[in-house]
Amino acid sequence: MIYDTKIMTDRSFPKIIFCDRKLSFVGKIPDINYKKRYTVVFVPMKKTRHVMQHLLYRRLSVLCFYYSGMVMLLFLLSACGQRERGGYVLRGAINGGGRDTLFLHLLSSGRLLPVGMPRDGVLDYAGEVLAEPLEAMLVYRRDTLVPASPSFYLENATITVAGDRADAEQVQLSAVDAGGKPVELLVMRGNTPELVALSQAFNWEEDSAPIERPSNLRRALAKYNRLVAQRKQRISQFCQRYPGSAATFDLLYSHMPDFSVDELQRYAGQFGEAVKRLPAYVTFTNALSNSSPIEPGAMLKDFSLPDSAGRSHSLSAFRGKLLLVTFWGSWCGPCRSELPSLLRLHQTFMNEQFDVISIAVAEPDTRSWRRLLRDEHMSWTNVLGGGRQWLKDTYHISGVPYNFLLGPDGKIIAKHLSMFEVEEQIKHFIRQRRAKEV
Image (cartoon, rainbow, N blue to C red; front, side):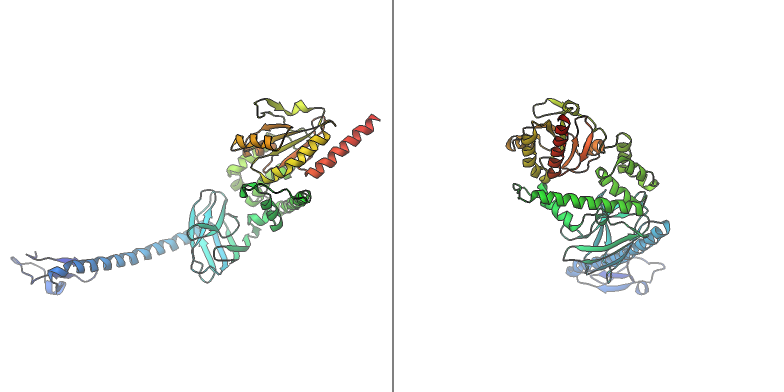
């Protein structure tokens, strides 16, 4: 043993003994030749602490280097294993990314997976095997998460992306492809910049100020409806081109009101097991099996809903009248824009066997709804409906405002009309009725 000394040893490299005086031993030390096995360094007692700190930092740096190498090795082995097991792979080029780390944001779980810093703009990332397709985004993380691209689907395939960093925080993807199938959701949904701009202009949730009522509102809404019709055409073309994909299902589920039940059922039979495991698919099929077609000529499903005073109202109570059924929300900008037109239509044609019933949906605060009924002089029948899921499951409607025009027999004449189109339908109905009376 070492006697009467202050000793510290560093075991990382060749043995070193630090002491403040000469080594002295009691008895013999068999099989040890300390001059050969140890390097002896004499250090004054007062400097011992500084030497110990130096050794500690040195040891930690060695350990960090060692473990970082191990982590990198495990990552590479894991990536290779994921490729071999058939997980998803992200490849492509993102130019102008700099030294910022790119993350893969899984929208369903909120998980952030570090993709890394694409070297020279080249992206190559191997992910785990997915039990079902997942919607994801590529984001750059600084102080907060900023979307780097529109969302796209992750599937167990090689997904190729291409894009450029548009500014200090965002990347604009120009292409997303998975084995010949485009999986970029914003493009597939047909949300053209023009349509997005119109939607944002009407979006009450993003603007707390009183909504403007421009004189050209009718033309703007008509233009919006034309763009929505063009979007449906694009969705139909995509569904025919890529039947059975997760992206196709997303399109159909997001735009159920735009399609007939027959169309939806025809597409539903084309999906594979991966899509059928999606929770939304169960909701989708249940809505189809429990509903009748919501098309012109069909009956709209009846309801019994309360008004602001608690009295119940049903569709069947309006039989014998031309009835406009509107779904809306006090939180919805386009809905509130239609209120003056609804008031004018109701006052103009209320004596012509025409009536209106408005169903408010997803109201977070019924006080706002009641106050709006009073402030906007909504003298027609107003009732309180359920939430967004109730609206989608019962009437296949994924967004408001939405309306149905019902004939005196309760059958659907038309749906999803602008206020201008509603007025034309009312005038046509009145002309037909008067022609029969002559």
